[in-house]
Each structure stands twice: as structure tokens, then as C-alpha cells.
Image (cartoon, rainbow, N blue to C red):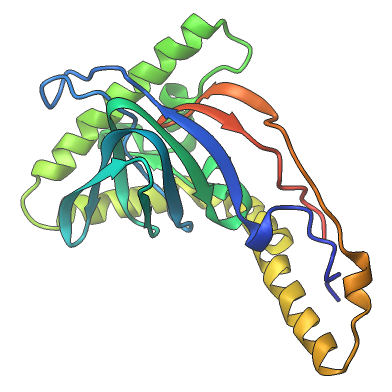
Amino acid sequence: MVSAQGFGGLPGGVAVSHLSVYDWPAEVDGGVCGGTPHMHLTCSEGYVVTGGRGAVQTLTATGYEVTPLAAGTVAWFTPGTIHRLVNEGELRITVLMQNSGLPEAGDAVLTLPPQYLTDPETYAAVTVIPADAPEAEQERVARARRDLALEGYEALRSADGPEALAAFHRAAAALVRPRLVEWRERWERGARAAAAATGEQLDRLDRGDVSHLADAAVRAEQPSAYGKFGMCGRLDVYDVYKGTV
């Protein structure tokens, strides 16, 4: 039985981070500034824009769209949405991530050219930012992988017909398959456990049992890391996923 008060993360198994979107100009699109285009395979993601202005470019099976972003905007998208953040002036976002932060734990594939999506080793060689490297080297790797992903992204945007996007979907799924056991465990201990706890609480209330209310708790967290080089920008991250129920 799941403990109704045992889940240690944010409500519903959500994770959160603060994002300052990259202001690095790209060689494509006339020097547009922004992040690395990528896609999540199992998670929805939400943006709460807290400052600045910009846009999110998205590419799905239904086509290409641009959604403007300004302070106060709330925007979200579902798995399979290729997205690229564009910074038009100090764009800052609070990011809400489904499934206990799984998007930042591997549930993302960058839109690299096909030759880099053949196996996990080839993919990691051009995407992993060495945590112990000097900041200048981390930035160099982050910029290089952003530009490489933009190369693949532009090819997907300009492709005729649906096959190029479908091929990317297949390659992404094959690439992450070795990590599915780890992802399932995170989901079971996070979002699934949180939903099960709500069901148990409803059952208790239906029986007239209010004992779980005596276990009420308050938690607060400061960021566990500041300014990490993420896919879309510099991240302040919170360790709200405790991994236990």
C-alpha cells in the first residue's frame, strides 16, 4: 500500500527549475538567439514565463508553429513536440516537468542529424557536458551541441512529407530504450505514487478515516544547483524528487 503522505516531491510528481534562456546567436535563422531543439518521449512540459520576451518554436506531425512568450504567459506541450526556445530579450521561465523531472533525467532527444542518433555512445559523445570541466569548456560543448541540433532541426523543418519526422521518432525511441527501466522506476516512485496516494486518501475519507490529515507536513527547498548548462539555457534546479514513497 502506498503511504498517503510518503511522497516527498512537489504535488503530483512535478519537478521545477528556473531557466534563463540562452542568448547565443545561431548561424541559422539570421542569428536568432536561443536554445537547443529537442523532443520528450513520455513527458509533457510547461512554461510559466516570469520575465523578458521570446517564443517557442514547435514542430509536430501537424506542422510548424511559433508561440509568443511574454511575462505572464503559461504554455505547455505534450510528448513528441519538438521545441526550440527563442530569446528576444532576457527571457526567463519557470519550467514545470512531468514525471518527477524525467525530462531532465534523460527523457529528451536532441534533433541531431541522423548519423548521431545511431546508438547511445555516438549520441553521448556530442551531447554530454562534462560536469567537472571548467565553465568555459562546458559552454563550448553546450553551444556546439545546440548548433548541431539546429542542423538536424532545420532539415526536419524543411523536409517534404512526414517520413523525416517519423524516422526521427523511431531513432529517438531506439536511442532511449536502454533507459526505460530506470525511467519506469522514477515514474512509479513519483507521479504514479502521488496519484495512488490521492486515491487512498479518497478511500479513507469515504470510510470516515481522517488519520492521514494528522501527518500533514510543510517542505521548502532552495536550488540544489545554480546556472547549470541545460538544453534551453542556464538552469537553477531543485532536488524535489526524493525517489521514495
